[in-house]
Length: 226
Image (cartoon, rainbow, N blue to C red; front, side, top):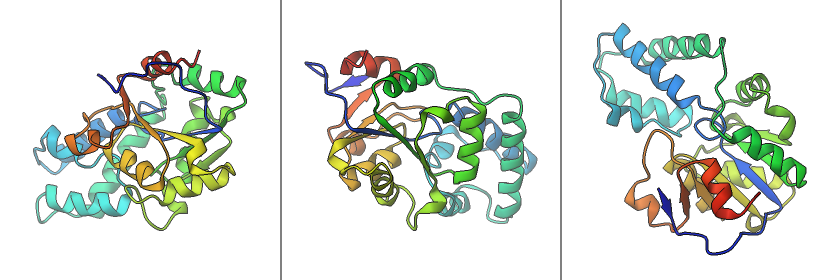
């Protein structure tokens, strides 16, 4: 998948604002596995389509969606506890990095491009995972969902990220995997490039007219960032 082909190399921005899960870290697959494990524990069968609705959301909105997906008598707090603990248990063995992420960060760092992470995950969790994945040293700032009032798809986190790197939103570029994240960056006025992970972009999202690539490697090739 590649939409809106770049006809000539795109100049590097002053700063790049990365999502984390599903974009830099291959943790969405781990989260999905842990979710279905949790569903088995309560003897509930969930579809891939229903699970995909949860992608990219902060905890508050995700819980509201869980209420609509899980059986009505489900203890959401207990379900989340099982899900989170099994997710963390799996990440204790390895924090998987998306293909091309390390090389991309190394390149941007060598070009003195400011780098920040804008993630719906809690800041401390993001710090821990990025450190264990050996990516933290390339990242100037981590803005977690706990640092803003309104979660994605609201623009808050991208506005804060641009402020942290001390740049105007127009001089930054965001990289996102989910539609929710793309909408958040777009609402903040940050040009955004999408690398879909577990869910293909919706027609509504594609209508925003942003660049979409299959992978970080293809994005770098298409943008001429080598």
